Length: 324
Ligand SMILES: NC(=O)c1ccc[n+]([C@@H]2O[C@H](COP(=O)([O-])OP(=O)(O)OC[C@H]3O[C@@H](n4cnc5c(N)ncnc54)[C@H](O)[C@@H]3O)[C@@H](O)[C@H]2O)c1
Ligand SMILES: N[C@H](C(=O)O)[C@H](O)COP(=O)(O)O
Image (tube, rainbow, N blue to C red; front, side):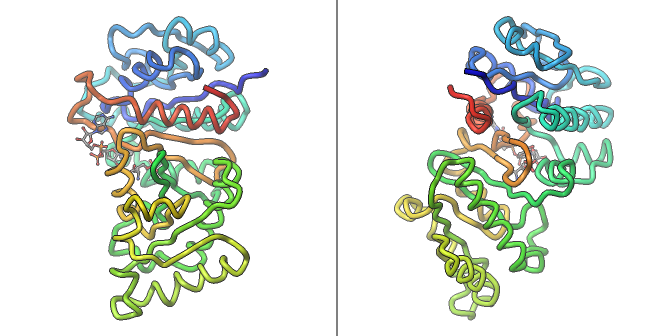
């Protein structure tokens, strides 16, 4: 059987926990999921056995000896816990390199370690609020969906990285319908669910309480749901967001569609912070990521939990056709 190509694992913010997570993942996965770290070899913890490679075809041999590293130029050493402006461009270069490798077919998927958005904006004028939007742009403006997924729950925020005050205006019927259709398709194609069931949250308290606490639920969300239901989609809502995440409620859907970032991410990070995976749907390639950020407060101290990174690598590998 032919194995999928290796995964390109981008370093993310070197001041964060990314470098130590890459090494922990390599040790725990024991080479069963071949990946290359795209970053600076000297940013990895001191005792790391590093295998410098120049091409991803070298990964299957290299990964049994050490962490395969495809070097990306960085200005200076890592300072754990403190982002340096001069290193912001290297972080972006690693992501762009990974995308080139997956688009050329040299990588089967990309997995991204956390970036610090503020550091990238201040250091390199990074114009995107996150990987999701940057990857969409690198893929030619693809309509994408941010999903966070774990064994217990999948969630999709319809609006993503925008201020809460802008949410009502950004939420349109077109956007909602597009995000739902992409999610539905991906649940079939990438998660193997034959007839996905979707539960859509309302925007307002009690999903608007019949229009008494806001009209978006009735005027915009409900008609989209009815249209998709008429087409045969298994979809319900708008549901009051405060009651759709308890264990009995979760048994009735395969993904929750939420109206804004924290409505979606608070429940999954509360239930499954250690094992949640951030996956971008709608791209012409596979992208996963751990569900946490750069964790500057613990970077370099050696106790960052690698479980979410391992789950992200496993999901990418599985989606690429690999087994583990
Ligand atoms: N995929 C990504 O690139 C991504 C994801 C989330 C947040 N971020 C960014 O990360 C930066 C910091 O965000 P934040 O402080 O809100 O969240 P965070 O996830 O970095 O940290 C929140 C808390 O969780 C802890 N934590 C996080 N990951 C951990 C791990 N693997 N093991 C043990 N403890 C862990 C941290 O120590 C901290 O106390 C922000 O710039 C944010 O935008 C990036
Ligand atoms: N919203 C994500 C989270 O809180 O986990 C995080 O910011 C990552 O987003 P990107 O994958 O777009 O960087």
